[in-house]
Image 1 (cartoon, rainbow, N blue to C red):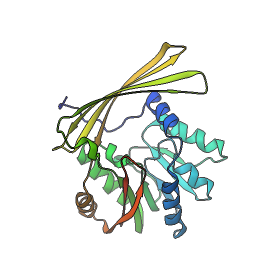
Image 2: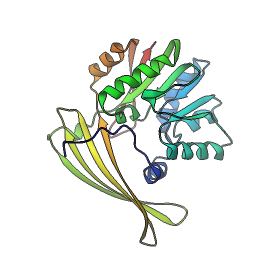
Image 3: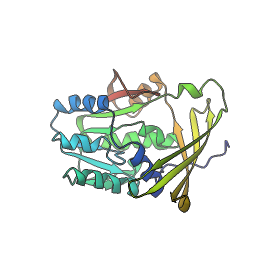
Length: 253
């Protein structure tokens, strides 16, 4: 299981649907944290890996003109739908963050919800940081949050299996079967996911995905941001979420 091909993008149709069902919105403390950050600024803002809009939509509801970007067309579809339900039609761009080429620059760019750790391999993550920096105005700020899967680090090569099933309003259910493998030295775990959509117990659609998740330690993250030219890196005491907690980093162009 160690010979994994580089996979930069995930979240196809069923994967995005599952995410939208199990993570319908951001944590309350997450929304509050970014609301306080935005109060001190004028914009424009970009949620650079916005997914289904779990943070973008609440911030729109608070009156902030925030745009979104994601590589997954399925995720952007849910983001557009979730925003429309609230009466919004934000600008959304389908691009990968490492190859982003937008026509404007932003005061703030967010990569939240641990999304930065989905950029694989690490060379692509460094490229993504350069791209984000290039899309900030002078003095603009990048915010990323990361987590460390401490519970997986006690045993190298640890293998885990996970099974979950969620139900949709249309009468279908979506089953996720996951096999994960942890490599402590390479600082990643790889999840092999199978999504199965069922109606009355009958399979009507299925899809597979390989999802690498990298992790970065505290000083490693600071040095990484500084290595691409960011300055005054700040680490917030605020912890977002639980099991695992997300640590927020601010870096200035």
